[in-house]
Length: 134
Image (spheres, one colour):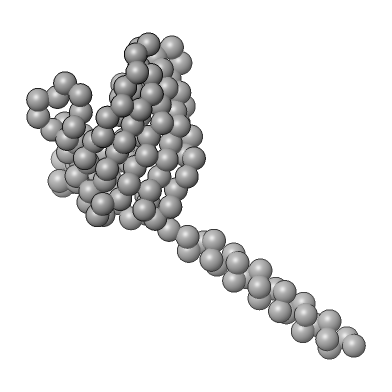
C-alpha cells in the first residue's frame, strides 16, 4: 500500500513538472524580436518612414502617444502577436495589436482617441540595424 502512494506521488510530481516546463517554454512575441533601430512606414502625416531607436518594443504599442506618459497593459502575448491597451491621462487611449511578420518585421495596428479625436492606422515596422551611441 505504501509503495502505491509513492508511485502516485511521483507521477503527480512529474505531471506538475511537465506543466511547469510547458508554461516556461511558451514563446512570447517579444522573445522573437529585438530592439534596435526600427523604421516605421504608414505613420499619419509622415512624408517618409519614421526611424526610432527602440530598446523596449512594447513602446510601439503607443506610437500615437509616443511623447506622452501612458499606462500600458499587455492583454495577450503569443509567439505571433501581442495586444496592448493603454491610457494617457488627459491625452487619450488606445488599443494596439502587433503581429510578427518576420523576426525583423512587425505589423502594428493601432486605434483609439488622441486629443479628443479618433485615430486608426497600420504601421509596417522593420528593424534596420543597431542604434548608434546606445
